[in-house]
Length: 113
Image (cartoon, rainbow, N blue to C red; front, side):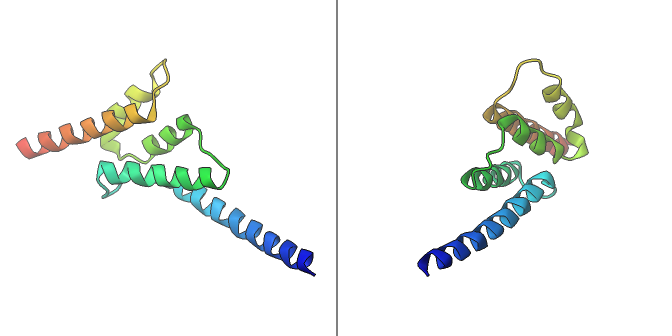
């Protein structure tokens, strides 16, 4: 019957969706800046969060910031500490601006050495 066909399709979609959600969550948890530019790194993080939101599994802003900070290399330790010790919450756009500034400052300093 059409009900059985629809039900089978729905079950198949749910299994596929669940596995895709798990895959995206793993990608977000394993996110690393590595050789990406800061802009590309933030874009990747925001796209992963967007995919989860579309799948009705939105990521809290503070959790997304935590994933982003965790994926930054060791040379960003001071920057990460300054953000994680703040009393007031910080917006994602502020984190992006501050990290981009820190990245550009670091690159300028390295060029002058």
